[in-house]
Image 1 (cartoon, rainbow, N blue to C red):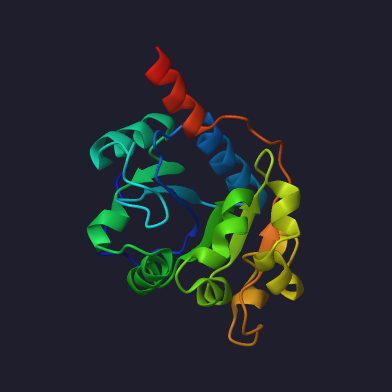
Image 2: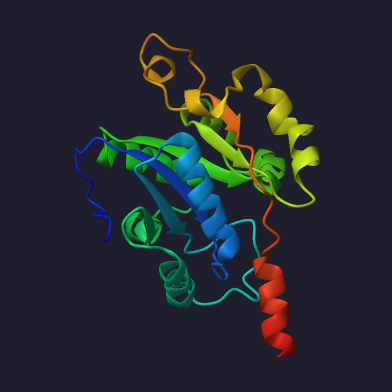
Length: 205
C-alpha cells in the first residue's frame, strides 16, 4: 500500500518514524512494532528522509536504495515505507508534520523517535514548536536512554510527559486540552541493530 501525498479524510492513528534508513534494519522494525502495539496505532509510516540536515552526505546511500531497504522490512499494510517527505518537498520535520496535518486532517499523528534523537532534539529546527504541536513517543536506544531522560529536551518538556496509553487520548488532543502536546517514553527492550555497524560490516566484507 502506498500513501497518497495529497492526503485523505480517513480517521486513523498513525505513528511517524522518520530517518535516513541507511539502511533500514531490524531495529527500525522492532521500534515500529513496539510503538504500534503500545499506542494502539492503525499504521506506522517509515518516512525515508531525502536528506537529513544533521547528517553528512558522505556515506549516505542514494534515496531510492534507502527507500527500498525500508520497503523490505515493512509489511505494506500496518508498517508502510514511504517517500512522502520527498513528495512533499519538505526538509525539516516541523514542516513535514505541518503539511501532513493539513493533508490528513482527520488522522492523529504521533512522532516517533529514539532516545538518541531526544538528546539531539534541541539541534532540530523549531524543536520547541515541533514538541508543542505534535505528540512524541520516545523509544529506548542502547547507550542513550539515561542520557536522553536527563537531557535538555526531556527537562524542558517534563511537565507534559504522560503514560503511553494517554498519548493520543481525545481529552489531551481536544481544544479543551493543554496548549502543549504530550510526550511519552515507551518502555521496550533495547535492540542492538545499528545502521552504522551494518555499513561497517558491508565495507569489511
